Length: 493
Image 1: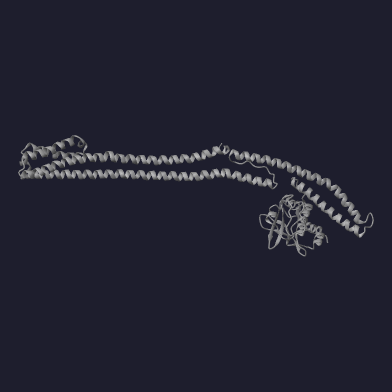
Image 2 (image 1 turned 90 degrees about the vertical axis):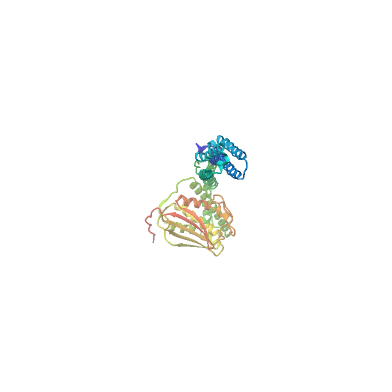
């Protein structure tokens, strides 16, 4: 099949079509030129050759006329009759030679008129030449012969002119047809060239573009199978190589996820015990702590909580990335989940001197959510916003519902007035383990899991997480589809 042929074979076939059209164009032009040459040759060989012979017959007859005319004058002037007779005889002999040669093919009317001159010369030679030439009847007869010959010659020239015009018209017709056919073949060749070039380019560029997009997708961590492509065998071989690369990368990613899950699980138990121990110390179970010991305990507690968050993020990323379904609960109150996330980050905001404010524009209906994942996701967005916000600034959390589009979407906007994101940082913002320092932010870069996990959680719920920058404010928007409205649980008084 052509779609599975080698690129060299495909190019040979497509270029062969163009060469065939060029050959056809040359053949059409050459055929037209040969036909025109045949017509011109026929005019030259038949018409002009015949005209030369007829002109010789006319000249021979005219020589008899001149011999008779001069003889009549010479006879009146007393020139010997033998001299006059000799002149007429020479003209008659020359005429006989022409008539028996090329003049034999002359048209009948012209030939009859010329033969009349021969008969006239024969009569002049048989009789007393001078006496015959000076007769009035001879003059009248000679005038009639001259009139007949002139008319015959004029008619012959007119006939020849008409015939040549017809041949010229034939040549022009052949030229127009040849030109039209040449233009048609040239236009067909141009269109075919455009079609062939576009088809060839598309048959190569389209699969290459698809493979390039697939390669980019692989680089971004999307390991979905690479679909077969139509194109030359070389491109199909490239697709197979890329598919093998995808399988190896997928295996490496699975090993990485498995490793992270194992490490996170192994760290979770000792961190839980450490947290419990620190909690017992803080509660005074082992005795009262001095102020200095309380400060050290506070630092240890914060470090422990940070490590716990990292471990939980690693476990959540492992669970979500592996394709395990999120544990959605019916009747979740998104506003309560957001308020819980805000409360968990209040202490961090106070330490940074940043004010946290929640604005509910439209209270969303009850949703089906994994409330723990959504709470950690919103908390992570708030924590990032606090870390890049200057002191005495505000981080605003806006809750609302978008009515645009095919379905209702609940949204949570986390807005900060930080320095914003550079194009380089924004291009890899949601890639896992792709942390970067934000210019002007006091917090150093983390391990690069928070935003990547947040987007994965949003997509696992059928939603999306995006970022925008407008009027000096950076907004991270979490969108969650409203599948169907649940009865809102009663708020305890």
